[in-house]
Amino acid sequence: MEAGMRFGMLGTGVVGRTLAAKLVDVGHEVTMGSRRDGNDAALRWAESAGERGRQGTFAEAAKFGEIVVNATAGAASLSALGMAGAANLEGKVLIDVANAIAPDTGFPPQLAVCNNDSLAEQIQRAYPASRVVKTLNTVTADVMVNPRMLGEPHTIFLSGNDTSAKDDVGRVLQSFGWDQAEIFDLGDISTARGPEMYLALWLRLFVAAGTPHLNVRLVRRTS
Ligand SMILES: NC(=O)c1ccc[n+]([C@@H]2O[C@H](COP(=O)([O-])OP(=O)(O)OC[C@H]3O[C@@H](n4cnc5c(N)ncnc54)[C@H](OP(=O)(O)O)[C@@H]3O)[C@@H](O)[C@H]2O)c1
Image 1 (tube, rainbow, N blue to C red):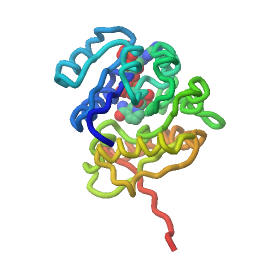
Image 2: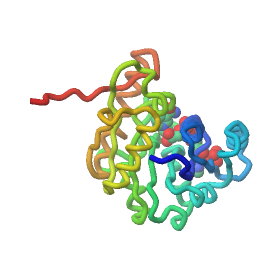
Image 3: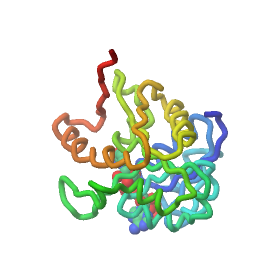
């Protein structure tokens, strides 16, 4: 992935801010989007990011991005993308890192969509002219952008219908420090159901291991 690309970061939470900061660090420009121009967290982030970081509405961020990232609350992602606007997403790689946690469902939370559908598929159906790639939702924000902190190889998944979009996202992941051998292409967008439902296991691992800085590694017979 060459430096100097334009990213639209939809989301002002810890994930949006962490990914946006890393994208700026590796040489890209980012506009962070929110429901309203002037969101406090987005303003603070843009100030800290320097000249390659800006903030605005979801629509302004999506329009700015050559690649757009959905880092909004999963149950609100379709609404946020609606505000971003189909025209601003058309033809673009849309990286979806959201988990569709149903609000107010306690712990462990329930998913708003699962089993025979996924948020990533809902997004791809709603925006057929965009190239949705699900990834990174299976690790905490720090690990997304600093995979080497875990000290040994581990696995990150890709799901999407468009092979070249997955290649682009793979290059973004490599620029974050993921090794190519750690990036596992699960297949088309319907394969996002697994990584999305993995949240149930991730939450239990988090509690039992006592840290969010964890991940799984795919180990398979090779001969
Ligand atoms: N935390 C992690 O380490 C982690 C790891 C893997 C995946 N994820 C997933 O990544 C996503 C982002 O997580 P997060 O913790 O950074 O932030 P979050 O609190 O889940 O989401 C914040 C974003 O969602 C937007 N939002 C909330 N309600 C909305 C609504 N009704 N309509 C439109 N937009 C709305 C907010 O808009 P405003 O900017 O306008 O407030 C904000 O930009 C989530 O889907 C989460 O499940 C998180």
